[in-house]
Length: 64
Image 1: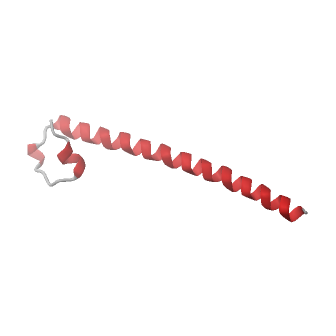
Image 2: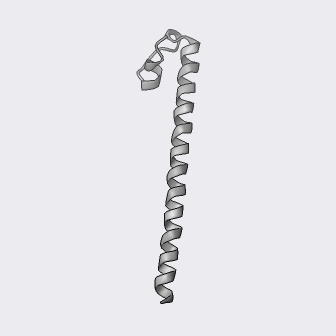
Image 3: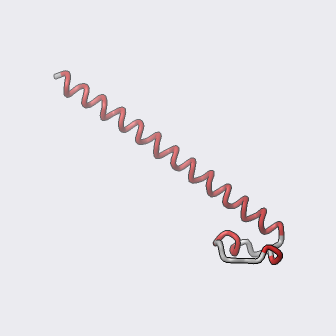
């Protein structure tokens, strides 16, 4: 089983590919996408916390 051809996007004829290779490649892409989404969520959460901290600092400075 060589699903690397599918994942890398190399041109292949559909009849040359075992259906299990296609399923394995789709699963790998799905898992990779889910990992990226989780990483983006973490980044967005960190940025939101940092922005809120900056807002609080600005409020304190302006209130002086």
